[in-house]
Image 1 (cartoon, rainbow, N blue to C red):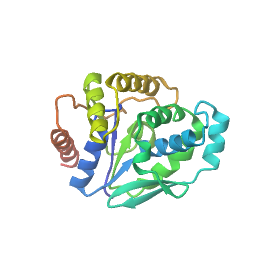
Image 2 (tube, helix red, strand yellow; image 1 turned 120 degrees about the vertical axis):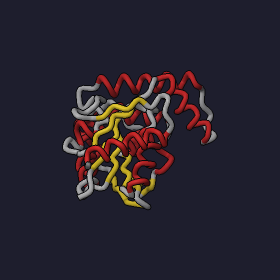
Image 3 (tube, rainbow, N blue to C red; image 1 turned 180 degrees about the vertical axis):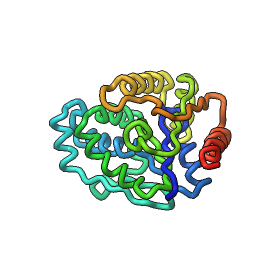
Image 4 (cartoon, one colour; image 1 turned 45 degrees about the vertical axis):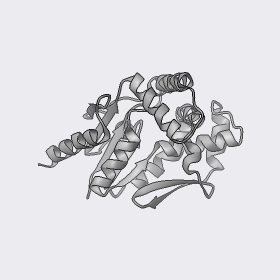
Length: 222
């Protein structure tokens, strides 16, 4: 069976871009697990549900149908039949997702979906706790990091490319808030999983990061 490759790390480290490129090189399926939390956060915001209220989040999970569909070797997320796509890619949704992901009822809802998606191997799973919690037995674990200033710059450039009206100071504030939430939460905090290869992407481009990962994969299977 083909291996499961996990890529964890903070926001703006380049996980999504690197994971997509790596999956394409290996002809693996790309799984953006953060999109699952964003999907629930999107519905919570849409329905004006308090993402700090565990009881209401429990109701949200019970009343929400989240489905993963494989499209061209990438997993698309559907919420109640709606392909949420780019609707979940705002800073507001990202911060809300970071908050609701701290609650056990939410993590239990999505854990099964994630493990089911990786059950047959041949997948690049990107997120915050893929190697530490979701796929602890993954053969290849990567923790991708970058300087916070570089991560803020990347996120700003990404949003500008999408013609979003963004303010650098707002992105800085939101990203640092997410870093704080992700690393300090009691459940599945953002940490490098045991045995993970830590790669600092601050001064590396996507191709260079992918090559480093491929070198590691080659070393494991030699």
